[in-house]
Structures are given as C-alpha cells and as structure tokens.
Length: 162
Image (tube, rainbow, N blue to C red):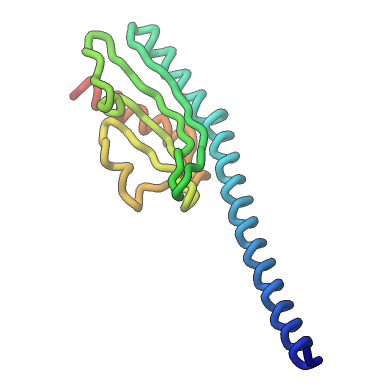
C-alpha cells in the first residue's frame, strides 16, 4: 500500500473515530440527563406529592372513605416504548359503587413522567382528558404542594358534586 493511501486512510479513520466518540458522548449525556430527571421525579413524588396524598387520605379515611396510593417506576421496553414513572391517588367515596377496572382513573389523581421531554403530566379524573394534550406537561420544578392540593380539590369537587 502506498504511503499516500495509508496516510489518507488513517486520516479518514481518525475523523470517523472522532465523530463516533462525539456521538457516543451525546448519547451518554442524554441518558445522564434522563436519569437525573427520573431521579428528581422520584424525589418530588416522595417528598412533595406523597405527603399531600397521605394527608388527604387520612382525612378521607377519618370520614369513612377509602383511598390508595400507588407508584410505578420508569421502565424502558423494547421497541422504544416505556412505562413512565408515576404516583397516583385513587379514591373510593363511601356510598359509591366501586368503579369497573379501566374506569378507576375517573376517581384518581396521577402525576406521571414524560421522560422524552422531561415533563410531568397531571391526569385528574375530574377532567380525564385535560392531561392528555401536548401542552399539558409541567416542568418538574412546577410540581409543588399548592399545585397538588389544587388538583386534589378539583378531583374531590367532581366526585362529591358530580
């Protein structure tokens, strides 16, 4: 092989390696950012959302109503799909029939990640389709006690007045 081919081939391979390493670094940075977002969501769910849900649940229980709190962790699936992280409060008011499986979200308030754009979707049984639109994602910093309480009161108003 001539020295020119060896030199040019080496230069091309150097550029290729550099581009490949840069692409790998971008992928790793995106994964790190996503991991940080999910970790921060877990922290907000534990320290902000859950305490409000638990306090409301105790009030509900003291008045004869049932509630449950459930959490899902983020899980990537094959084919690019995922199970988003979530925390949800389900309420069964005293004297109301239990809802059919599949309709239980009509009596629930859920905070769910959208890992792909690093936002949190709020699904409230009081307005079941309100949290489905693209513009319904909240930045994680916006999930505070007041927002949770406001959404909880909206759900309860729909349940007791509906």
